[in-house]
Length: 290
Image 1 (cartoon, rainbow, N blue to C red):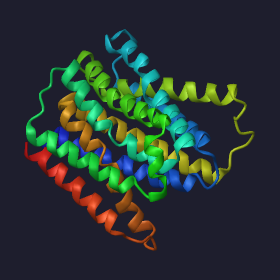
Image 2 (cartoon, rainbow, N blue to C red):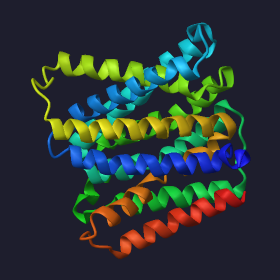
Image 3 (cartoon, helix red, strand yellow):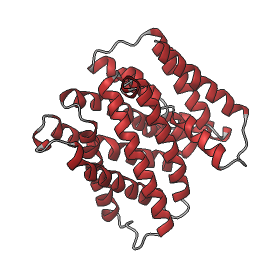
Image 4 (spheres, rainbow, N blue to C red):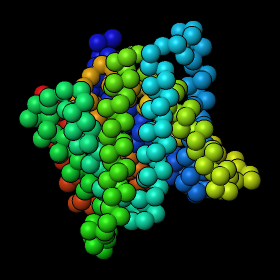
């Protein structure tokens, strides 16, 4: 049993399932708040959760550990910068194009892992990663009318989002090799990210004067689910390689789809969804086999 719980592939898939579920709770929360307010509440909740766990799970004087300052600096990269770029790319290009292009983040992770960690992916892992990326792209694409936007120079924004998300896994792996404490990684990155998001809301004058109780509860739930997913993700990265863990993490849209079918059975299944899921599943099988 302990061997199963320490398997990086299982940890990564468990993290993906929680990331996917968090998309559903945030979807409900967006009925009451704009996305940046929701993210602020979610980040603050995740950071608070990690601080509550700290006295029980982190050693005393954890700020003296070699990875502490590294993880704090990493918080500038993810979640803050990646989320800010994601908002901007969605604003400029729309949700469909932004999500589709951002789906290449596992490829960015793989390139970073090869360049900075000297990881060498097997051919099956390469094919599996491509399958996952193509599957997520198919699931993300919705409107054919937006095709012309793929040649828009502003496509650099979702590409930058994908690069930052992908490199966050590489940087996280480096930090965890220094200090293999997933909670410390989550605590530092989300404390920085949450603090910067609150500062950004105040600086732009978009801080809400009051918070709708139901909307707040949905985003608090999102933050708690995300916190568990982050711990699983960093646990997977500390035990496995980036070229395996990163594409498995990126399968979370499949779990969002499954959760949507359970809680929103009125949603229509199209051939695009079947094709996307099939590509993702095939990719995961190839990665698992190798």
